[in-house]
Picture 1 (cartoon, each protein chain N blue to C red):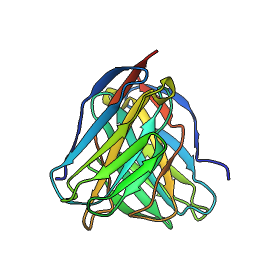
Picture 2: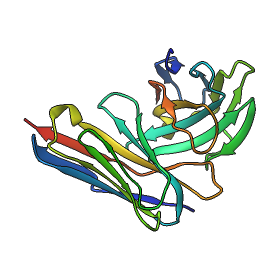
Picture 3: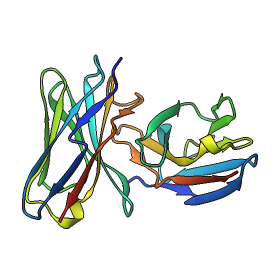
Picture 4: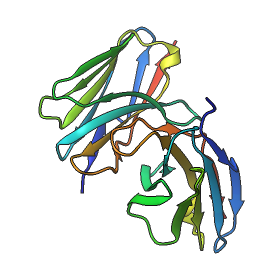
Length: 113
Length: 111
């Protein structure tokens, strides 16, 4: 099976702009989670989608949003970018929610200048 | 909220030495997962522990889940240069589907 894919892999944006990141999960996986990874805060959970519904949300401001499509592909949007949003954004897919192992994609490296 | 502390933050070893990283949770966990992230890579799932006192082995890696389900450890015997990377634990507390990741332990193996 093909692994989790994320596009784009690298992105440079200016403060105040918005960005959309895309994630295609492993075929058959219906759960997609998003994480932000930074040297200062480590891996932090953003949100999880399952069957097009947001199931869980981490402690991030409303500027961070996402959605999932009927084919399980997911997008994450960050509006009004701030310098502190520079990070590696990781998408992880799993067969279900809860006690399932997660398969991470290669991530999107976002730099905000 | 739930916190998962992981120590040490860094560990330098000579190739062939053993390595251990520890995770401690502020709350009782329903399960704990371990991941490895190579430099420049993404986290890769290693194992999941669910039962109190559970011990699982994968070749030179031994994973333990504490009796109280509040701590866990990963032990690598006779490290190799291929073991280099950051090892993360991720715990879920009862009723929560949101995993809390430890800050990770970066293993540096000197040949």
